[in-house]
Image (cartoon, rainbow over all chains, first blue to last red; front, side, top):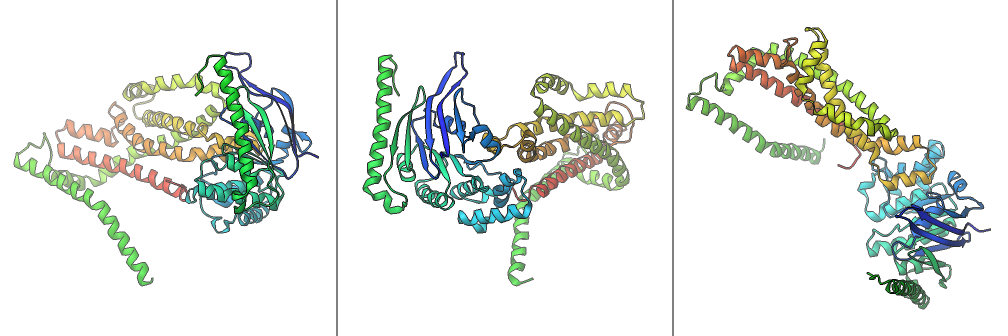
Length: 270
Length: 264
């Protein structure tokens, strides 16, 4: 059984007007339970749009999306996924613990049960002593870890992430990548991860989905042969560099193709 | 109390004094300059009263100033409370029904552009000469618009990440209102109150200049000037200053109490 299935989905904004944008055209993607899949591509390739279709924050113009064998809409109502964004998006007026409890509050959990779970989640992201602080008292990396704890608080089978480490410095970023793999391994969560970074995509993923813009579509899916356990040595492994090269070439391909198409049309490519 | 906390407390007090020191010194020098200018150039009392005379009048008329302050302050307070409640209520309605906002905003701007005294004169005409209502209505109107504009901003200008997050939790509109929009609007309400509190006092004074009861600070200032009691008029001005300051300080204390945990 697949964790998530996108079938021939398209998303067209402002259809029929002069501002029409073909954000996604005929995209199909199947993700297996426990799999880590990254979406990578230049700006405007529709990777965030695809993530929002899966999250049912947007409806596909054509095609279908199913999560856990349900429609995306039903999966959202059943809270079958957690979500994290580039901005941690914590609420300034809530303590760290109360931030993690928010999705549980909305599910109608009792206070004591919420608090117990928030404690567990703080242990999971290794920040147990920060429960009663406010988000602004934490560093960017810590805030992002709290956001992940919040996304996973109700133990959803699926985690959707939109460039969650995009605003972090390189050192924190690598640390967070290791932590994310550990957390998802411990909770056997399926992940769909949007990123701009090639090494990040390769280090984290079982498969990297390369996308290209205008119109947004999937050009290549690359299997990363790094095995299940990854650690700091992985970053020096041959398979890691092979993966990076493969993704880079796939991205260049989309770029070259795109430039050629523009050259034919006589448009300058930035 | 241990030695360490004792020294810390002293250090804190010293720090406070050091902070307030320059302002106090400046204020004192300003008064000294004023006093010496009045004496040195032999300025006539009808032109400018000396601070010492003003203070003397303030002490002498303390009970009257207090009574007049109670009247003006009472009007300001009632208008402030009613205006805040109405402003908050209306901002909820406007943030819920956007088309209403488009209908009402031009009217609000037009109403706000009318100078206060025009409306006071009209309101005075509507009610009996012994009524406090025109002044209270005037304060209510001024406060209402300040609160409405700010709180409506707080309810609508929420971070898109927060709204997407709540949608991903399948939260209802009401839940988004309660958990995101309302907490987001709280600092905006206090910003509004910080502006509205002194404005309510000013409006209450100014409203008294246009007839009606002669019992507030504003009317006392005009009547003392009419009787060439310049120092007494200044004493009432000092009372007005203190009243406005009191309103402002209360609004700041309210703010700091309600947002203890949050970022500045």
